[in-house]
Length: 230
Image 1: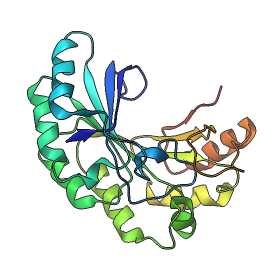
Image 2 (image 1 turned 180 degrees about the vertical axis):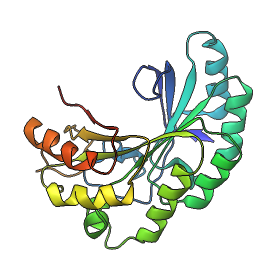
Image 3 (image 1 turned 60 degrees about the horizontal axis):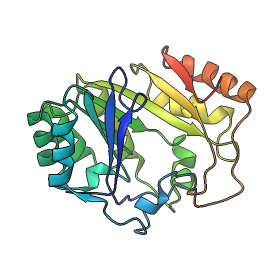
Image 4 (image 1 turned 90 degrees about the horizontal axis):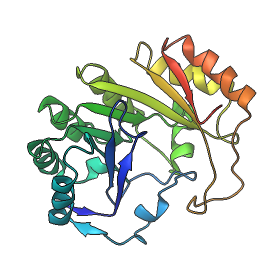
């Protein structure tokens, strides 16, 4: 496994744990609001080989309590299960971030017990899903299958949506809510612009709008929370 980035310590990426975050390259989505677009378009070169990463983990014994794997889209990588096995053998639980478009891989790593916590991005309601992913079309049956796999896996999990003023409105969260109804928890996170975001003219919703959207989502997921909102 070639690693395209490493955040050596985070208190945010793995709920309840001090963790490091590993970034893997490649993604089949082209979300216009992506913060890690250099991992998608190939401009980011691998940062380190797997062996160096495991030396790092060994050196952080007692300092970090888990490894978050993100991207890009980690489930694109056929060697992901073996990478997770090695992390767990080194004594660290794993958190996985995914776009939910690879249910076979998702099911495999969950059934093997390789993932303690999984976070899936739910981009939008079905009618606007492809647009929000930067694609012409998308198979929503795949998205729904991954949602079902996660909700029945027995692992801790969350669904989350990055909310962009130009891409999301109130009715969209009725549709999202119907897809994830009864989930453990759901987070709405406010878009923040960065130099790495591929497309301009996107903006963060107002705090009032974020709270209003969360109220809609609460009808479907009781444990709905806001991120990036004071």
